[in-house]
Length: 161
Image (cartoon, rainbow, N blue to C red; front, side, top):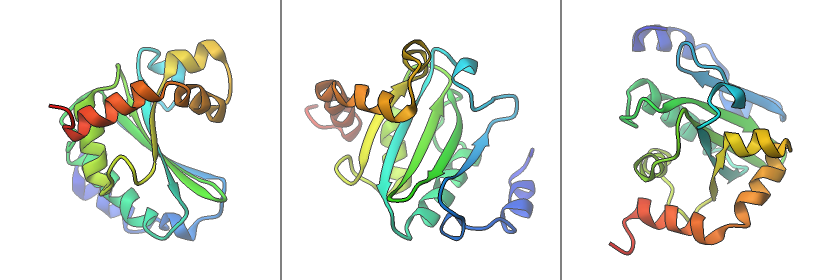
């Protein structure tokens, strides 16, 4: 898709996330980018785990609009993924290179969240490839470093400046 008009021509026919079954994954990536860890080994993704509720429809739409509207103002943002699970919905914002606090802050703003509203962490693709474990286990490894996570969240929220 090259224009916002082309995007909306297709988007208006898609089912909303809450209309889809569990264990479905939706992906939206820049042309030429693929949702594979190996494609961006120096990158990673911001992971946002939301408790199941109807707000996922609006949050997903806001995230898609932010991506096509270049809201993140960073070419390192290469795509988004929504994973629908039984008790949580997982949103991922994929980065080509390392994470940036500005992108984290913009993600919270776009989703209408603060750092305490959801489980949020950054997952490095290189770590995922080396450790070769499931996304769930990588998330647990990242949570083992709460000071680093808290520093990212505080930097993005402007705390301590």
